[in-house]
Length: 119
Image (cartoon, rainbow, N blue to C red):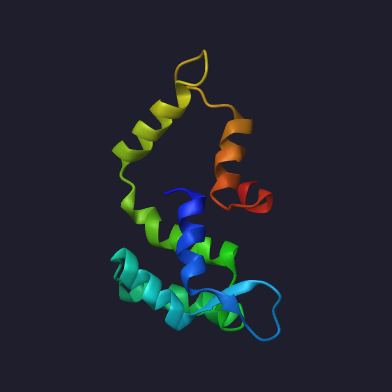
């Protein structure tokens, strides 16, 4: 899914919380978002999400929200999915099977992953 899609979903439930300047969601809002997209977290994922909220003072900003969805989505990608994505991206270059580091960083940045996380 594209970052714009996640931003639209986030904005449906986000509001300014006391002590913050940016829009944020609380745990209840995340639950409503999960209902909208038809996701039911397993107990391990629920514990991870609760821990994220605890670490962030009970609310999440947009980038933190994207991290929740990365935790949710990682197990969904099979080896075949990853190979197909790589195959599609490598078609952008003259050398089949290759993706430039700059392009990988660009894609990860679009997904909300910071340079620190990329290294």
